[in-house]
Length: 136
Image (cartoon, rainbow, N blue to C red):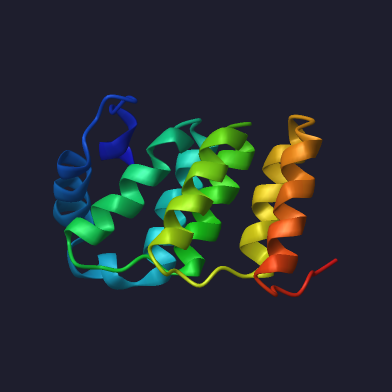
């Protein structure tokens, strides 16, 4: 995460992928390691890099899982970056990452924190369409 701190919104996915490979090496394929990196981005207010980390994984031939996506969405919620949370959710759904109620719940929470009620309700409707069971 220290290596990612210096990056801003104009950082490209190749750079992030290379940093991930250099700093994480083989542990990049371990879900917990990447989850910790993504959650840490939320703590240091760099959640906008979450999408780049997920894309960087793919560049290094590691497929993001729902576990990774959830961590990225939670990081966005911590930074009040609800729009980025929705972008991540949409992008990962398009990449055939199986979404679950926990991931949707994190996105709904990110939207609700910023009083984005229409988006929150739209996500609930999307869960119903996708037949994802709601978790209270």
